[in-house]
Length: 441
Image (spheres, rainbow, N blue to C red):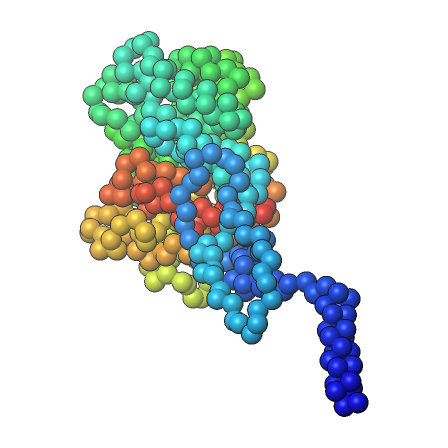
């Protein structure tokens, strides 16, 4: 009897075991998603707003969006027999930069001597700017009387138009054969020669140039070399160029050459820009132009500071309104209002220099911009963006142009103007480039 009971129990256990095998619900294997993958997927959707957290990056060779890595698809694994801790992958090293915000009234001056001009214009596209400024030396375009060298400029103008930018061309420096042997960087002895040249220029490029800036900083001896500084003489020169352009290309806008801000008013090295503007307006400047050029550089001072402030960020170049961005804008506007002139101000140059990432801070004693050692790259970025905000808030400010994009790439870090560039010598973006790219007007 006992043996029969043992057999029956064994048969019962066997049946029970087989039932568990055939009728138990199926259990899905667990999926182990590494923590690093989850973090990576999240970061691909986040663009950090702080410039200092974004490393400067070389421009992609094409204008397609910045490529981002794709998180690997997790695969199912068998259920572990014991708990295991997943080993996290290395986190991503950089955060993707968002596409540029379009800014139709923003522009930048480029150096067209770059061997890859299309690359330069892609850099401008990467900022979201719609204006490009190029400065042309008359002495190069017409080295001999009535023999014009348009070929190099033809290539520039055609490509700028192909990219559908608005183009501002500044015209400077009469050839020596029109200057009675006093060198370059100055006006022709006979201002009518400027009208003759601009007739040929505007006729050749009719419909391809959006605006012309006639001359550059005529209140400085280095730009009016060999001639006595004279606001009325500048107006005469502008009148000759303006009449020629309006005859040859009526759609083109005409901007008066922006004045230099120096704090000097000796009549030899410089005439104070505010005084020069008043006298030029009295001589009839407004009737010949569609906008008044202005170069509101801030030296090492933040764009929101004023000369009258009780304290200053910079410990020098802060004792005169000419050294302050906002003072220059507001003073010019007040001068135009007092003269009954309703023209817009066109900041055809503005910027802040920084040696950081460009060259040593041990600048030579004769360096043109010694205050560049006082401005970090982060400060440069902040000042440029805030300057743009200040101009956007003022309806009497027209299109404005950062100076400059790529001097450092074309001429190297030893060129003084390189400290203003938005790129580094290896073409990496400086923080200012990124800040302007993502800035929303």
